[in-house]
Image (cartoon, rainbow, N blue to C red):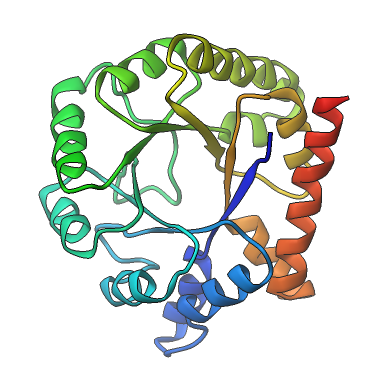
Length: 247
């Protein structure tokens, strides 16, 4: 099974915003990533606009030719933006203003009514929704019950787990297998903290994954090798993991 690569270009915008310039433009970065063979572009529009801005989302909606995935919290402000711009996919994520990056998955179990209502509003507008969750079967079941078209398994505990990484791979594999067994229409994606070193083992160990969202490490690697080469290297890492999985 092919595993898609969606590139998150948030941190191109971080570099732009650090000096208050118009460059580097995440829209330009997205175009280069698509030319290099990625399968989609992901951006996270945060409440504080620390990287991606409203203008970026609007222009990307007009220019992305693959798939535009808008990550956002389930607030009225963000829902209004999504309903106006109509990305190909919305991924609902938890968000705390003071966090440096997303720290964990949505608690769909504990917030079923609010999340289900947001999913329904998006679905009624023709926008499928993915829910960013921790790899737990209860969260998978709640996501399916909420009407999500997909889930994105939080891989941060695996990526930063050190000696716990093998156990976290097992946990991710179990959650993915539960999703495909109990909810076969639910697409399984994964992301957070993925690098060239840990991507292949993840793909090899979790056969349910059909899509990866990779951003910070890919943009960091691109500083030294360029965006096109970085996308190519991550594609190679995904394919290596898939080949090992299929042996």
